[in-house]
Length: 169
Image: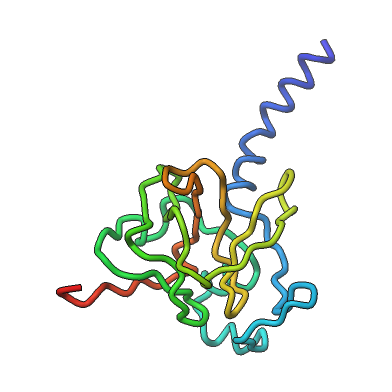
């Protein structure tokens, strides 16, 4: 009977664990990672003033937006996705694909656009992706993407701004 009680309790907590993974536990986002200093640095108050609430929560506090909540999921025009914190181009629309996860996903970043670090915040290790210029949290990268890279850069739409390509490009 104890095993049954454990299983029932575990099943009851499963949705809570899933919500925590999907929503992202709030983490701290220092402007310096170890000895890494970023080109664009601001005080917390300056970041709060220059970003929306969602952008600040995601870029500076390493949170995650709800799946399916970003307008960038349905963005299919040619163009470039920029860091919402410092306007650095980070992904090309040519690398975007429909992952079915509810977040904008890409096979590869633009050259010299991102940095990565180990994220141990939720149930193990993940690879966090951040803007190499301001350190803003963009999302995570996984090894379950399509060819040619096999990577899925699963990004928060609120952490990026889309700029369409000029006509004729």
